[in-house]
Length: 249
Ligand SMILES: C[S@@+](CC[C@H](N)C(=O)[O-])C[C@H]1O[C@@H](n2cnc3c(N)ncnc32)[C@H](O)[C@@H]1O
Image 1 (cartoon, helix red, strand yellow):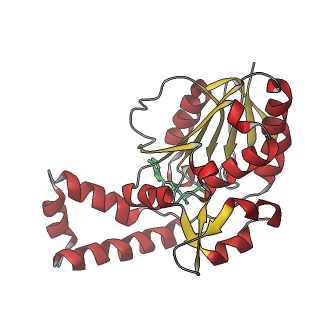
Image 2 (cartoon, rainbow, N blue to C red; image 1 turned 30 degrees about the horizontal axis):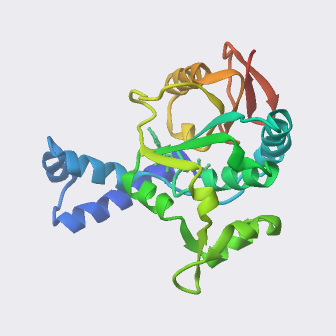
């Protein structure tokens, strides 16, 4: 895990790259450049975002989500049309939402019969564009258990793979700042917000968790990152496993 100091050093180094690209020599000059310049505000956010992610990261979440959420849905919705809504909040370059989609596809054999949609959001517009391309180095297969390789197809070049359309079709990507308004209608069956809140202070994190709780249907699931365990009381949420919470019914 990176320390706060290392993370600040890293942000400064990334921002310095942006200054060089603009031929600016001081952070003050950059501050003046950014003022009132919406496009540059976006570049600024994109340049300091920490996007590290991988497929099946924190795999215990998928060991839980597969049988408890996806398979249970498949069982209860069999023969009818079930509805499921999911949210990958802070989705980075897509490995998290595609992992969720792969588990859904594996656990719900008649997935096409159901109304299943996933929203995947991030503050960083460049990383969302990358996620939507769904193209990864073939070495990413090493992160993916072999039973899921069927959802990766050869890319344009031999060294790349592309996530199959059947998974891509489940996901809608949107830019969204978790600390701003959420133009979202309806509630979710599960929300994944992992390794995002580490960057927020305690009160900001508490408020965000409260908003996630409201955005979950009763009985819905919240998955958070390993270093983001919730301290103190979070009304309406019950701890069900390692960094797995459930909204009370
Ligand atoms: C370290 S990545 C985690 C990706 C993925 N959830 C995972 O666990 O592998 C954190 C992501 O959160 C996004 N992020 C940071 N602050 C955000 C905010 N205020 N609103 C939305 N996304 C944010 C970053 O752009 C980045 O892509």
